[in-house]
Length: 123
Image 1: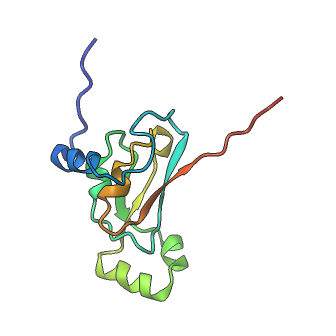
Image 2 (image 1 turned 120 degrees about the vertical axis):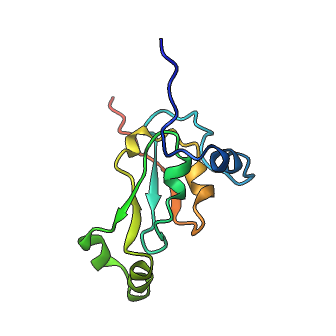
């Protein structure tokens, strides 16, 4: 069996620094996939890519903010978004999140939170 290769855009030095952060939330990568979901506050996010660089599970992408999301921003956040090239983080692979919390402490704007996903119990 071949060893898993690190993702090419992972910044190992930045990830190690985030892993040592004393206020790192989550379950230190021990949660079941999809038990937590990273929530990005797009009014705060400046699209600096730190979340992409530290996430070992490829949960994030930084790209141009969708027009519908941009329209929902308050005026000051719209101006901030324009200044930063209308970039923001999205979580297309949020079901791969293991709640390591690296993204939360790496984000310089404090725009990411981890939220536990509610589970439906039958029976």
